[in-house]
Image 1 (cartoon, rainbow, N blue to C red):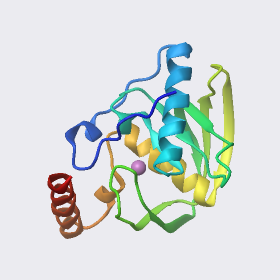
Image 2: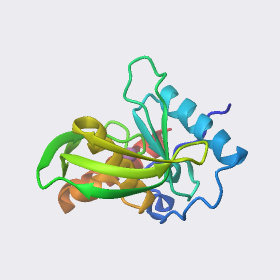
Image 3: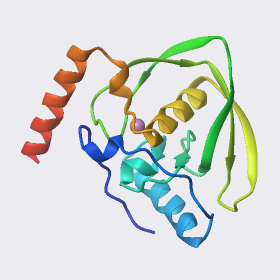
Image 4: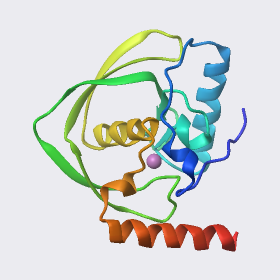
Length: 167
Ligand code: NI
């Protein structure tokens, strides 16, 4: 396994729209493991392929404290959303140190392929639902800060650019 480089906002590549995974093969299974390792090392609870500069529809999530419940969602689609929405504080490995409130559907039903290429469906609520929506936004080239006010976005960009220069 290998640690992958995570792109930092406002890197333009984060705005790339991902293409569907054509085939769930060993390359994809290795990518799932590498993304898992990268996410655990960061540490974070979710990571989209977009964030490691791979523009294919793949996300990984693990909400466990023990880091042993890695879930891969390949070619994920949201097939149902609740009427109710929830607001919760989000962060992102591509926007380190920034946390803010985002409104999301409280529950979603998602259909995807697992790392064996088998289809599955999952109904999620709370943190998992928010996380799935956050990661799937990445596949559309959208970073959570884009839900914030233009003023906040400008401030975050400035802060991130300073951080990049300091490194
Ligand atoms: Ni993110």
